Amino acid sequence: MMAPVTHLAYSDESQHYVGQFRELGLVSLLASLAKPLVMQLSEALRDTGACEFKGYKSG
Image 1 (cartoon, rainbow, N blue to C red):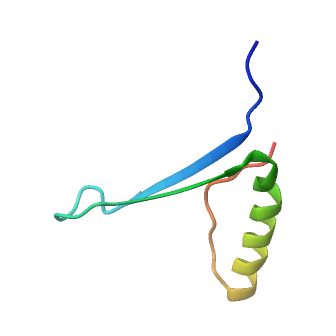
Image 2 (image 1 turned 60 degrees about the horizontal axis):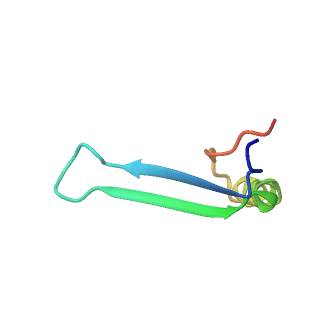
């Protein structure tokens, strides 16, 4: 039996093939907070006119 998923982590890299310094960002959170957080972030991005938020797919 598998244990329930309690935490999620999302990461993204930037410029990982270019230059001396590479960037990696990581966000981790309780799984139960993912959907409400994505809803808040999506609303904030919509309000600022940003065109993209990656990392979460519902379903």
